[in-house]
Image (cartoon, rainbow, N blue to C red):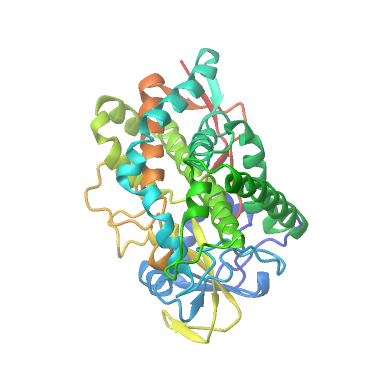
Length: 394
């Protein structure tokens, strides 16, 4: 991590890698919403940060002024191509539409029993120890194993996947060499998988994408398929394991909510929606394609906007008691899965994995707490969630 000057003015010099932001961004966003709803920084060659739901929504639905060519705010000019999320209209639509069927509620339901088996296998490995790392030993494995199954790739490669994700979404924010290494290794891995499926197709997502056709009847290029696979691996794992980890963290630190969900497991699906709202893991970015004004703030072409769906979920003009976690909240139009043309395709899968992970954890480990003797840390960069989550129980 590079040495970074500390932030002294969040309105005009914010930094999403500042230790204060990493530990508790919600207080910063709340103050900005009251004093400077669209903040700006000269870091990263210029980035705006809107904090209100209405402004974030306006940007998400305006691809004409806000391009998806760059979706991560990072140092340097190295760009990652992961269609359809890095594509603008109309190019984004063909591949996006192809990716929808494997993630419908019906398709996801067929994965639930396997997800439960994975969760219980993980719990079996540490339950007798009366302690674990809720992130490293549990949350991080669940979406990795499920997406590996869907892609038809070995679950034993999970450590490699987690390493690439850390390199791409954390270390790569400030180190272009690390980011480039991760992208090259991921590309090489999936290029080999594509080649294998061309000679021996199977019932998996790699084969599905290779066999899919564009509206004109042409197959997708290897470049497009590889980009989609990179997206599924990176976006489909870190985001979900962060959401699962945040849920475990909340229940470890708020005993009343944990005890209620143990007594009323039927409330868990509602609680999951609230935990997604309160601890939404994903922040995306857009490149400003043309000068525009949002929320009374002029924005300059060529600079970036950090599109914080977590901040939108904390806007008191949209949600009552916005900074309070209400696990039985009934009206909850949160945007944890984004807004606009790039709303998360895998939302059904993420919800299922998160629900099952919490259900099985509470069934097997109804009483648990944070272990103060060991460090607890949050991630840095585009996706927020626990990276070290020491848990004690029993």
